[in-house]
Length: 482
Image 1: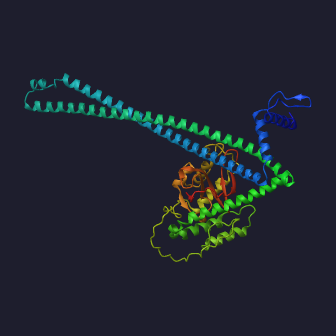
Image 2 (image 1 turned 60 degrees about the horizontal axis):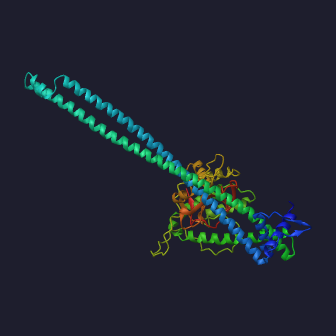
Image 3 (image 1 turned 135 degrees about the horizontal axis):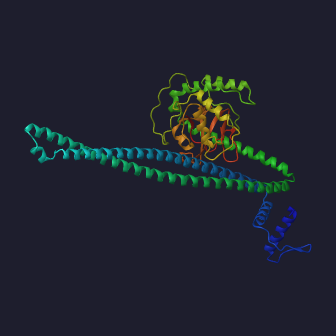
């Protein structure tokens, strides 16, 4: 049915519902079939949009953006839950295999012990047939020496039998325990498998929900753009561009504020890493000097970053910043600074910020180069490269390729890597995102820092591995250095 007839049909039925009358007859045609729920919802949404003024329409556009942002975060959270469940399943499978191998070895040992016990009994039977019983020993003895030697032989047989009995009892108990552990491991594996399946189903549902929300948001945006064009006597296309510019300015302001919060939080612990500052500056200098020039950026910028790092200045790679530049404290004197007087700090002690990662600057560049080589690869739930990657699959693969092993999930990665403040980041460091930045168990995403305010990430289903500007909202207090 053409859109105009569908709209007319829906409007007619809404009018009927509002007026409480019979179906509307227009042009001699009565609409006998009621519109679908989707038709009614679309008509109500159009009516709601038409009732908004400029401020209300813009507020609703902001609310749509926030809703989609929350939906995207939910997808990333579900993806990381699945990655954890998948890793737990893999660990359970390894433990089950090891338990089965132990049970098999214990069973073999029990079989061997049973054979030894049977041999001991056969030895006893032969001894009895040779008159080695107590009465036979005395009756058949020619002298005391025969009694003594024959008695010693009997005691040796008895010891062999007793030892075989004890060994058989021990290995039988060990075999039973090993079998019980295998059964328990198999139960854990089954439970882990069920958890992984449930996590995957939940992740898929959140992705489907995001897809539906995105489609609905696009339709609602169209109605809101039409309403704004009507209110301002402009075109829909102009309103789209105007809204894009407004959202871009708002996003820049949010990112600037988020970056400032992240840097302020991390700088509270920078004094604890002061003794390692020279090493960090040297690493940053070599990293900046060796990093290839990015497309669209001049070589003079790279040289400036290298010179700045080598001189001990601000180690952050230069990048556009929409917020006013804050006045920085003068650079610290190269001489060792006196240790400050100990004072109680009402906030928790921050983790160390430098010198704790095992990876070198060269390995960081190697990890970054590997990650960049995967740009364009599709996102895959729990993917390790066949055929795609999830976020932590990409970062673990990158560092493993550089010769530094890190764990598989973003949450465990944050707990195990070294921590660095954001103004000391170098290419290859990891940036973590969480729903609650004070709780590492809520981490939902990880990306690899590329320098120049950029990062490489496997964002979510439907978006391939990409290089994109660093997002500062909801970052953990520290970056990670493997």
